[in-house]
Length: 372
Image (cartoon, rainbow, N blue to C red; front, side):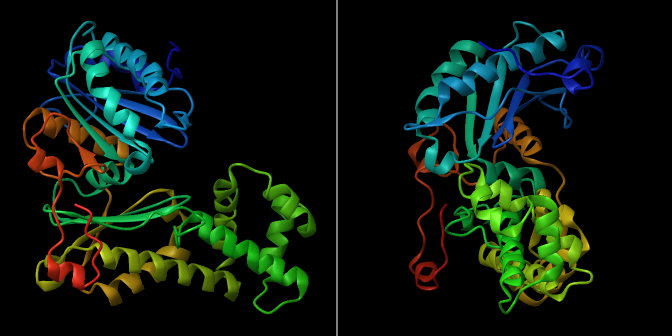
């Protein structure tokens, strides 16, 4: 098995000095995404991680979905390293929560193989398998009713009243992810190509940035289409759109439209209780929102118009923090987030937890996409 990648400045490298006095029982949070696998060791009764480490590259995806064996090749050495650094080599893990991009649609092998494998290798007693949107929710909102918009290359909104989940978008750059980084980047490149052609809706400012980043405009299709990471390439142009928005009306218009898409997704998932009285907490998390005011100013305006009762809150943690908090709640029997067969599954719980809530006739007639 390959050893996890560490840097001298990583939290894991310092864990021996900082975490030796921390006693168990221990829990583990895992965040598996497009940029790699991250692991955090925590202890019941301690809110902050004891130690964290980054593993190698992203977990492979094959014909059977996310590769459980490849995930274990990275996770098990990382977990043992963190326990060793904390002076707890040989200790068991009380609970593990794994959040993975694509868990809902590609996580069948993980759900089938990980429970027994983690119990055998680490003595794991309780396991939660979650979509990365759920761990993002847990990291940003916690175990309270509310909504989270996770924006990066893509965009997904997830909300819950603690009875069921509502999801909006997150369908990928060809079918959705409206307002996300790839959507903004593509819209900016479209405006640049329109300027190159002399078509309506073009932006000379964005054309200038396209040529500075990618080279001559006519060569862009040949550079872009063969790439297997097209969404990431498109998203890499989103900061250029934000940089032009202050002086270019086309770029500013793209970000206003993106803000409208993001707010629309938040509105679709915000719990009904938030509209009837108590404020619905809406958290924004992910690199998309680091673009700052060019996106956030129109987004606040759209959210205020669509969800006047909503209260925007800063995300208190990232998906790794969320995974660790789910593991901690699972270890103490206090996991209140709704179970779902693919979004948040706890193997070994009764069928009433795993079947999920069924949409009521009223909800269905209103067109609300209940998925809990």
